[in-house]
Length: 159
Image 1: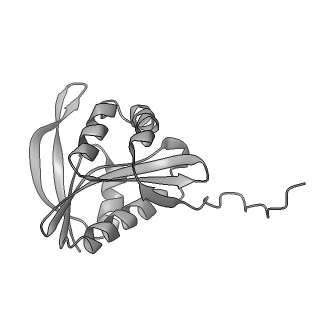
Image 2: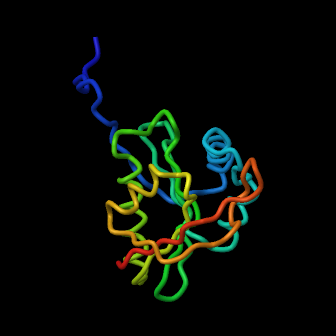
């Protein structure tokens, strides 16, 4: 018999956040490949860390639930990648990871946080708008797509 109290059905597992390190990259790349048709490679993540970008992982116990890569330059930040793994979605974890990223950007001196999102990714757009991101532009042909290229919606959040 377990000495831990049972979580109510559907209760989200708590997440912890810590800086991403080299030892995380295989798992990060596996999650990325599971979640996207055109994933970043392990090398893309390694290059981001090598360039000094801020990488973060979200864990629930021993399970990696997600990650984010943040670029900070002067008083702006750019969210390059944010992902919650499919099995961990739907319990507010994406919102929690995004809140952590916003806090890190703000604490690092950023006054604005930018990101790009696919027009076809309505779930992400709804999340971003719900926390205050505004559409500010469009990058034509930014993302690879099965039928060629897909635009990116550029969004910004005042921090």
